[in-house]
Length: 345
Image 1 (tube, rainbow, N blue to C red):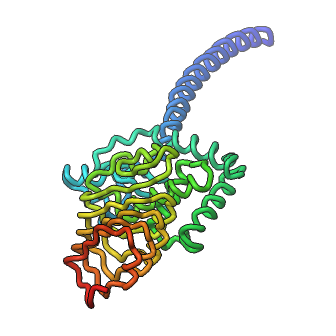
Image 2 (tube, rainbow, N blue to C red):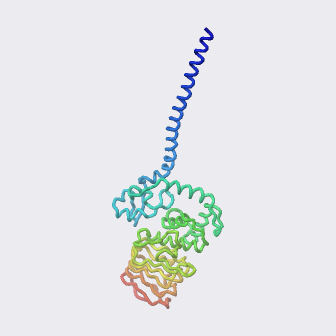
């Protein structure tokens, strides 16, 4: 019995059970479950991961708001082709993030095909490389934190200590334009580029009729309407009849060689900066046909090289300073269609 049981059980069971269980189950269950489910999951995993980053960008962001011409809009405000043409390429920020076209935040409303590569590619290239090691030899900075602080320090000399406390969107936008592009120039060049960008933001440049090349990587002397001398120093800003709104930044007088400011036939509001007299190289101040209010600052008449003052068709008030007699070079003075009082000195 022992020999007969041993041969019959030993050969029959191990061969049948062992081979069938081992080859059938591991190969069928192993390969079928392992390649089909894990690979499927692994295949989904990469596609899920990239899409997780851009997902908010591939759907209209409900709490995203943007301001154009002092009016606040949201993604659902974009309903017509005219809206798309007017808004979708304007650049705005969301929750302190990078400056991007509105279509990135309202892709459905703008009909924008947000590929999943947009966000992942930007994130790795900007974050890892720029944050830890951003060296600007000209400004003697070795990392991004030092660079940002140095840039703010330079711009506070022209815009004031509290310019970047978060309450002044125009100056914050101009600062962030410089930081986003990583401009690395000597301080006078940094200031010129900042003020050029600030002029754009403070006069609501995104609603201008024509804003070609403004706040782009091109040199500011190549921004349409800015003229420079051979040393690439700004000498003139000419944006006549171009739907400018907003206000005039007092920092314009920190453009040391600015000689002509031609901004007539727009919708610029606010007042003439009190310290306009710092623009000592001005020969032409042409801001007629706007919405300027307040009085004509006395400091304007300290610019002895002025040849032309064109302030007509505004809403200016007050009297004309006797200091106008200091302007011995003055040939053109236009003040009509205002609300000035008193006598001509």
